[in-house]
Length: 310
Image (cartoon, rainbow, N blue to C red; front, side, top):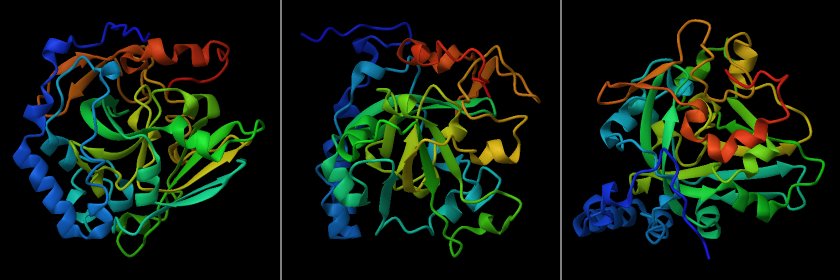
C-alpha cells in the first residue's frame, strides 16, 4: 500500500485549488477548440492536456499567475532581457523532433506528438528558483525523465546526460551575439537525471508549453537554479564525459556544473538568502535545495569536494 508522507513544504489537501476551478468546462472546450484549429497534430494531444495533478510535489506556496510566468522570461536566443515573449512567438513548435543519442541501447528520434503519446503524462506544481534571486511556482505538464531513460536504456558506462537547445537563426535574433557559446547546452549526472523530481515539461497551466517558456519541450529539476533547465530541446545525449555547460563555459567563476540552490552560498555579486516571488514581489527565505532536500540530498553525500552550489 502506498503511504503518502507530507513534507514540511507540502500544502494540506484542503488548500489545493479544486481542479474544477482551474479547468472549467468552458476552458476545456476552448483548449480543445484551439488544438483543433491548430491542426491534426495538436488535436491528437487533446487527451493529454490538461493532465491529472500529482499532489506528491505540493510546493507550499501559491501558484504564480500565468501572465507573469509567460511574460517574464530568460531565453537568450531571443535576447538578453526579460521581455522576449513576443519575439519567441516566431519560433515554430511543429513539426519538432528530439533526438536521444549517445551511450544508450536504443537511440531514438522522436516526433514530439509520438513522444507525448508514449510517455506517462501528469501535472506537477514545482517551484522554480532563478539564480538572479527571483522565483515562481508553476503547474507544469510533462513526464518523469526516468520514463524516457527506461525506453532508451542508458549503458552502464554512461555517467552524464547533456541537453541541447535548438539553433534557429532565422527566428532567434540572440544567436547574432557571437560572444555566447551557442548552442545552449546543459547537463547533469545520470543519477540526478534518474531522480524522481527530474521532469520533462511539455505544458503549463493546462496548455501546451509556449515558446518563451521553452516549448515545445524543456527539462526541469526544481532543486537547481533555473539556468540548468534546457529549453526547446532538440538533442538529449548520454555520455561518460562531463559536459562544460553554457554558463559554466562563459563565466566559470560564477556558474558551476551542479548549481544546487543554497541560501548560504552567495552569488559573487548578490546574496542568495532571499528570493522575490514573481507577481507579488514578496521577499521570502530561500530554502536549501529549493525545499526539495528530502528528495535529493542523498545524491551529494559523497561529493564534499565538488562545487555543488552555483
